[in-house]
Every structure is written in structure tokens, then in C-alpha cells.
Image: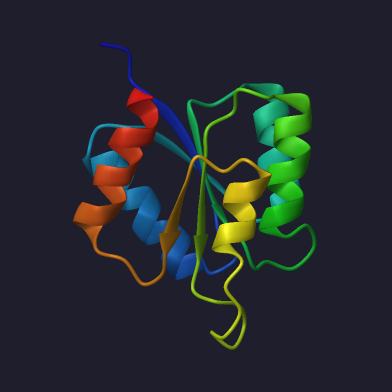
Length: 124
């Protein structure tokens, strides 16, 4: 079995590190990106099996990342994550799905939900 490569981007360092740690413990090769720009650059250098992308970030937001990534890499598998924006009231997860995200992950989430979703999207 080939180890699956996953890139995680979230502007919240604690969230990014927690997801990274859970993925590594589950046996995935995980890479961290601090921004949308960093994610796109890393993906263009070497494609990943899965992208976990926060929607609300400074610079390029998650919706922009999804659009750009799928324009250049139509088969990219993306899970969009969101806690509802900077104040928690805006839900763009449905928009992310309409743009082509394979699935969505509302924050906060439990470890089991993260790993179950990752496994399911990778199996598609």
C-alpha cells in the first residue's frame, strides 16, 4: 500500500498543527501550508493525494484555492473546512462543494470525523 500524501492549510497554527499530527499518527504523509499561496506552490511542485483547505484565510481564501487548484488539476481531491468565518456566522461550505470540493468538514470536528472523511475521499 502506498502512503497517501496530504497537504493541510489553515491560517490558525493550532488547528493546522492538530490536523497535521492526527494525519501523521494515522499513517499519512502530511505536509503543512501556512497560506493558500504556499499550498498552491507546493501542489504545483508535487501533486498530493488530498488537500485539506480552510476557507477563511488572509490572502487567497479557500474558495480561490479550490478554483485555482481544480482549474490546473481537475482531479485534485479537496476537503474544505470552515468554522463559519472570522465571526462564525458565514457558511461557505456549500459554495466550496459547488466549486468542486469532494467533501466538507465543519469546525470544530472530532478526530474520528476527520479521519473517516479523509479515508472516504481518498477511496473515491
